[in-house]
Length: 414
Length: 148
Image (cartoon, rainbow over all chains, first blue to last red; front, side, top):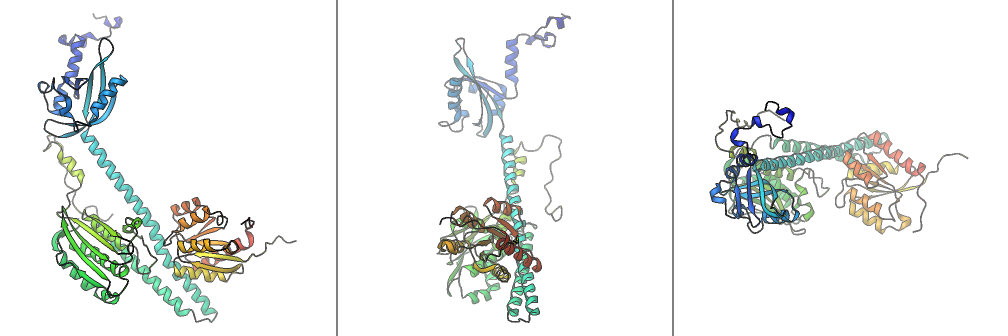
């Protein structure tokens, strides 16, 4: 016995406890105690074997399952893939690995990786099916949230790239104008030609004005989001009447007819932010949506489902469908108008974003446009990463310290 | 006997939405000896309409094209010009404030013949327009007039 090393015995018998010397018993012990769900079933889905791992994952004990159909584990009994898969395994006579959905005894839906294999009888026919299944719900959820974060990051990077390119363009343009007309002015003076002087000076003045406006708006847009919104209940009608007072001169100048719906919803938002968003929408409507004196600008809103929405509509030229997304991006202008900086709607979008809300435009070209901004009726929940952590098993049994929720505003300016 | 190229009078088409820049380019171009005429269009669609309606003999010798244009954007105009056999051989010089790599890459991918970034400095600006006019009017041998 002590010379077993020379015998090339396939089994290190010494190491095996006496009651597991039989390989068949050992194999069954291995299956029984494996930390994954292992079960077998007939070709029509009746359960034959069910290990402790399967009980741990699905909640059913062996007595409940053996002899029963595996249908109760399926999410969609008519269309779920296990039936198809059984067919494929029988036909292909080979194991297959798939991601599938399962329903536990207490009704939870799990994502599992299932390795489905054929069990052959003495005639080498597929007689039954074995399944080894591992719960990957948590992994898949993490993958999804990672993908989401990645996607968000990519959007941010794109936005930043666009930002740099457009800032350089939009800031450089007035500089070219200023330098150019100053140069021409100098030449004209040298040549004693004074006719074009007033025009050159006017163009230089306008360009500096445009530039300072652009810089101001840029600062505004960068400020949003640096401060978390301070939610409180506020009547939309209050915000609207404040704004209308502020822009009264412009309403008079454009001879617009402003109609405010009598029943505006109550909001749970940061009033300063929302006021800024609304002001941008109203001034946009005044700038682009009033073609004739007396053209209406309507401000309204509604509460629906889980959100409260406001809109500002006009009967201006409207916006073609292909621009409905783009106009909320920084520096997207549809016109070469001199008034706009292309930042107003980006501010609106950012304000919707920081509230966990959304904004969009509804428009039929030629018939006007309605700009909507919507906010959650109750404040946005914390980010989903927290949900994932807290969803697992209640109070942490381990000695690991609980994560402190990140304090707002730490880390200073980015 | 001399190798000096001859000045060829050039007709420019300037596609530029910024009125100030259009005036600057035009005024500077018109002072160059090689310039015969500068036509200005303020947006992409207008430029395409003009090019489509122009008789072959009346097509511009050089197109100066801004990228940031309302209605059809500069890159789209460029692509449409280069796809049209009647227009494809007209040199298109992109004239923009954008130095962005993406813009440059896309412009050349759409077969821009040259890419010039508008200098802020006026002296440089004038110099650029002079060189531009000199290059296309004096040194560059144009494509022979094909059957049209």
